[in-house]
Image (cartoon, rainbow, N blue to C red; front, side, top):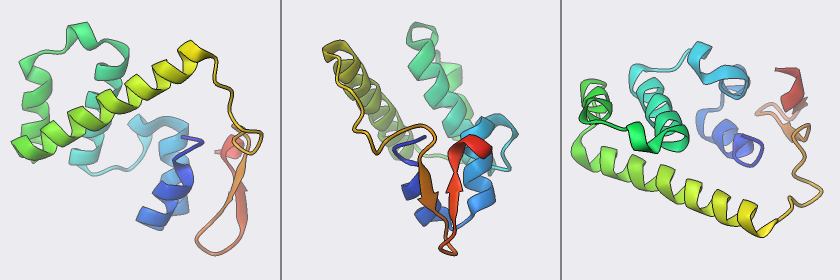
Length: 116
């Protein structure tokens, strides 16, 4: 969330929602399709060997078509690949990407991720 929080904030223009997602996406007020995508991404990231057709069916039930499901799967898999590559090589975050980093909110004020 540290790397992508500012982009999410720019996309949704809702600081409270971004904070809620950063804190715990399960309790954030997400639309059904977004919550289903988060659940899918979490399962594919943490337990990829346990993925079943029912995981894809849940995305369809939330309104995603096969193209959107393929796109989601590719994005999640790619980010997992890149993160594992960076971790495997010992790549360190740049100093400006600290978990407590602050980002300007949509109204120009700064807010920290750690205070969600």
